[in-house]
Image (cartoon, rainbow, N blue to C red):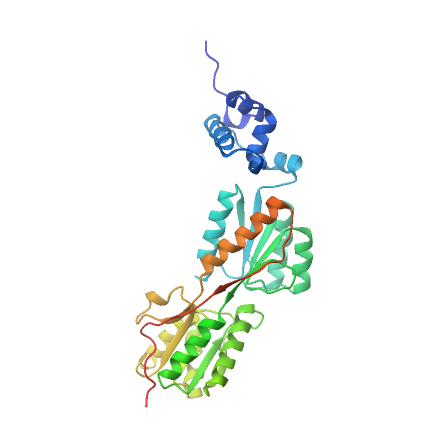
Length: 334
């Protein structure tokens, strides 16, 4: 009589080795160090393992290789539409490297981000911190223990990918001046955000160079409600146009202006940042592109290379931005 198939939980490396007609070490390397084998061998071993129902034991692999096969990504607000495209590209690149991604949402809190990092650290091989709110000293301490890549946080000596908003912000001020706007407002994001610091500096410098008055309106945590609630300050400022920290805030501003009967763009000009929701608003929003997906791929590439080579190269990659002109900016009202 034929023997019964063994359960998937009972399949071992030895079973896969026999079925694939390779050594146990080759099976192990096919999952832990595929870079040491030919593509054909890796594909063959994994296909046999899948047919048999073999499941890699993460704890056993960690003991034998020192690798968990996991990386962690922490973002300040997973609900913000800027981050999902970045998360998806990180996951896609990690999948190519046979890595799983643990995702953490710090809720804009440095304390929560530190707690997440501490919880993840014993289970992951490396970190991607997007728009980190941690003190630089804490980031350095984390990077000393695990390979770490930053997105939109510029700390010397740590690999990072920076979305350079300055180009798009300068284009935005030039665009508004050409339309006749001489007084504008910037609805600022969190002060501890590297992106906000960069955008504040860029819009202030561009406005000064072009003789445009800019007033900073503090919004704090970027949200639809924060943008809507900032409309009173915008009206009182006398500005004829505003630039919001991101598209979520600009959507709230658009709604708040509509409630007051202020037409965009005839009565007031509005511009967002990140270009995540801008094409979906009515009217479609002028916005600074962000390319968050591109930044995610670049960050994942850096981390995977660090894990595969065992070397940390403090690269500083930048992603350029540009202005996307749509229907919310028009000639300044007389």
